[in-house]
Image (cartoon, rainbow, N blue to C red):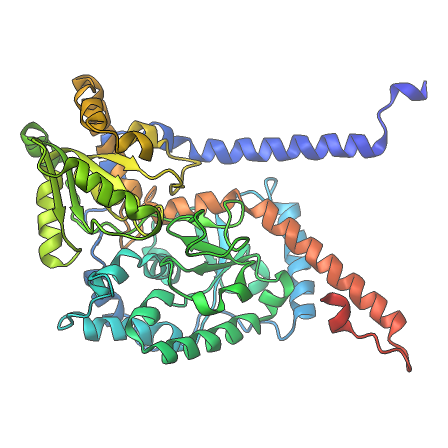
Length: 496
């Protein structure tokens, strides 16, 4: 008769898998509105007063954010104290929330970092924005680049806003570390990189690194439950190796290895976020007026000479320049460039989106909000929110080999049925909301999708944190037994 009964260990494993599958189905169900968005629902969710301009939003933010004490409670003094507090909080949630640890909203603790890492850098941007002509080595306007990578501002501004002014229900700020699922590090790595002298910036990076890694919560998890915005591929580069366990917010995974070292970034740990669009949204009224007047077949404006995978641009330029129905323009993202790009995209059916210095390009998101069907030519590209959004509904994916064959790309584009093209244009109108950062952050906007994607990472984060704590505790136990007089073994050597 004993053979009829399942062994206890197998029974427990089966129960665990069932609960995990049920929880995952719950998360998928919570994301289901994204699968069938409608124009009417988009209009319903987007607040009429939502500000999508980084400069305008920052002006309002700084004007209404004087120096003030943190709302967070007194943080624990050491790792052991925090670990005990987390245990008590976890037990309370386990008994009160049937879907813990996969339930929404996510609970995020925002560090109250010294002003030199936060407000001072935002003021530096504001004070230098109006009268600067500062360019990078390849001729791109520095402040425009910072705007394109300003995801650190949009997420932080939403998290620290009064709860009564926030619209998102996927995340809530908590003021006790023991209640947090995740920890947000509000350091503006991109602003500091571009607007500070090189050595001054490196010194600030080292200060920030020490501040972060000295926190008990960082020591407890090794940084695995900490969110670090490093959205420009040059930012925080000199000290990245010390924070490689944290969740990095990136523009792409850069599988070429030119910007991130092997083992530093991967999809299971990190999150890809869209660039902030450099052009204005072409709303429903704009789309109805422009879709009938899109006379250009294929449009591109940008730098034709790039590094790494972006070398495809010069090949495409040689193949497509001067061809009837195609506009290939050299230009940067300055104010005049923004206006030229916006006009060109709103006159075009398709917008070329080849790789830049990294596999991604801000041009993709400019095309989406302009109602211009992106033609993506980047063989190594990972896309933001790809686990939720189906990019096949709004973009064409072309291999680099096919794109540079004489005549191939134009023949392919001309062969697309008008009905299919119209369907993709309609989908662009629905999808654009997912790529518009705004204040206040909007439901189903990019800030919201960040936290929905983070929910899927929570089980792995908690698992790795518990395992790392188990290793540390085991090391302490061995040290208690072994570190007797005459024994040279120490805790540091055991852990390392």
